[in-house]
Amino acid sequence: MSVKIRLQRHGKKGKPFYWIVAADARAKRDGRYLEKLGTYNPNTNPATVNLDIDGAVKWLQDGAQPTDTAKTILSYKGAMLKNHLVGGVRKGALTEEQAEEKFQAWVDQKAGKVASKEETVAKAKLDVKAKALEAEKAVNEARVAAAIEEVVEEVAEVAPEAEVAEEVVAEVAPEAEVAEEVVAEAAPEATEEKKEDSAE
Image 1 (cartoon, rainbow, N blue to C red):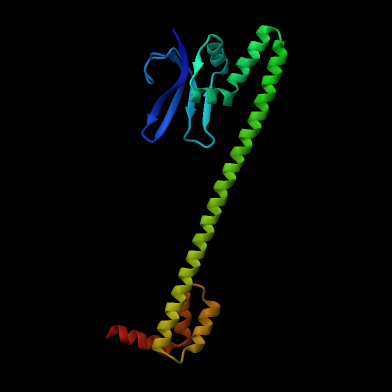
Image 2 (image 1 turned 90 degrees about the vertical axis):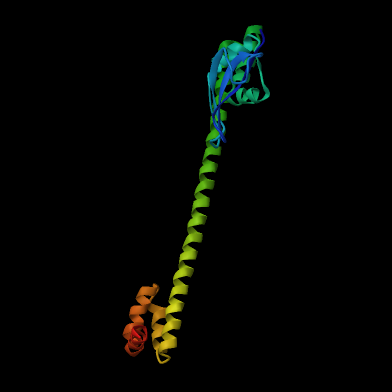
């Protein structure tokens, strides 16, 4: 019986989630399997992989053949390297202590790379949020400025003598509501005329 180490699809449409399994090569993709070795979630950045490295090495030593994607995942987690080192120990080229030391050094180096990638991704997300916030602030400021201009234009139409009120609005009133109050105080005749027009 030939054994394959391959991915078995789970999850929902558009959000795949995989089990890493050792299965008979003749079995269906999502059918019976001999042993579940781990999981692979490509929906996160970086992808989340949980793997029983010793179990995978045992199957590789017994002659199981990984598919291309499974081989990449096994390499990513160090199972292929450990299999290679176990072969060296069996041939007498290395002692078990040397093999374990080499494997641990590789694992530490890989953990550093993954941590740096996670930091880069987190920083990129923060940059995107900051840019979106700046854009939103700019839009809000433009909206407030437009509202103040509208109020000033209305006042200028009703009372041309309220030029002084326009200057006060431009300097003092950053918000449209405050602008209306300042105009009402500066040109009471204009606001009275406006009320009369609305009453008619």
